[in-house]
Amino acid sequence: MTETLDTALTDDPAAAPPTPHRTVRVVIDGNDDPNLSRRLAALESADRIVVRPNPVRSANDLVWDVLAGSGKNPAAVRTCRLSIADAWKAATAWITAAHITDILVERAHRLSSREALQLAELADRADADLWLIWSSANSPTRLCNAIESLGRSERKGAARGHMPFGGPHRPVRAMGGDTFERVLPLPAPAFSFPLQPDEHADPDGDWPPLPAADFPLFLAACRRRLAGDTFEELHLTYRREAQATDAFVRRNRNELAEGRTGNTFKRALNAYLRDERLGPAAGGRLALIRLRAIQASLLTRGILLRWQSAALGPAAPDKLTTWLTPGICRALRATVSTHAAAATVLSLHLAAAPDHFSHLLCRNIDEHGRYLYLPTHPDSAVFLRADWAHELDRRPEDETPSYGHTTGKTTLPPYAAELLAAHLAHRRADGSGTRRRYFADPKNLALDASYRSLVETIGRTCRRIGVNPFWLHRGMCEVAGIGAGPAPLTEWMTARRMDVVILSEDGPDQ
Image: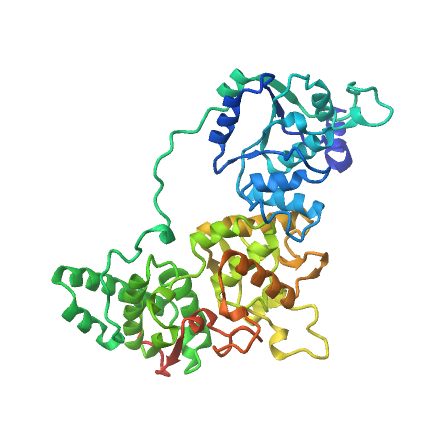
């Protein structure tokens, strides 16, 4: 009989036990000790945020204080085009993606019961602990009862301050300042973290100025101008890069069987330079050494990689590396809209206009934002087909829209993972699952994000962080194939004035 009841309870979703709520901890600070405020400032870290509610606020303004506490620009949170409901979803997504473990609310005695419940629900969804600092001589009993009874004690017909019985409850624990200091100790003393690539005073400090000679004469020019030990180190780096390029060509020798077009190989080379060799290089001079070695190695296999450095102006090697630097990602973390941050990350990393971004599905993004899965073969890109593929004004490229500027599993910069994971968490909160679009119309989630709206969103975000991607400007683009129409095969290389010519029809030597 017991087994039958257990089975019935298991098979009936409505009869399943409710998900337990996270415990809310109320820290009693009746004397309003200023040392506690200093302690809260010291507790702020990458996995702990402190929310400081504005004493002059309306009933719906708490979410803006939460966003400001999570690292968003306080001057921009109120100017974003988000409703209150979307703002709470964005706050939950950012906190979840950042793996926040503790949400501390300073001077929580100013909160209403409704606001305290909103924070408790936020902590539940983000899987974080909520700490309410009660800095008042008044008793927090009423607020604690409202939190524990999920607000039922505040409804009409219930006795004031009385917690009704029956139904789920949220555990609430009250403690003093001494217990709080013991349970949540201060982090370890600060130490110097290693600098990010864009924070170094001189990322090219390890290399002297290099000659501007083209790749056939690059090594000879370096031998004449550099000291012997410096040239030996450069030559070693050069040879290692050439060997890595040989291995890349061997892995992709089947793609070269296409003859002089070699579109699949060009796609693979574009992704190789962007994700593995030139894009993540620490500085422009290292990227130049790698590029010259790659050019020389490819030429021995019948592949000519040309680079028009004069078209990039002065300091051309500095423009070979990725434009999505850690500094840019830190600026994007101050953006409130996860939609705008994720679209800008993909556009800057791929150096591509968002004309095909609306085809992205939620399952094309790794849960942690580390990888982008975009098959390029027409047969494997069926799930990227547009819903409007059968309209009268369709184009041939709309039938099988594939991303020419990437291949299969694309590795994304680790410092940008939080931005993409935050938008994925936001879309999951909207009920998108895995088969719906990664970018939807913010005003109507049932519609896909249009190319025009994505361009406006990315352009507005780039202007705020001080970036000017030329492939998104409104005028005629000076680079052929960038800024409008279907994405070319090698947008990342085209943006850096590089192109590939297959000289040998037989492909590389086996």
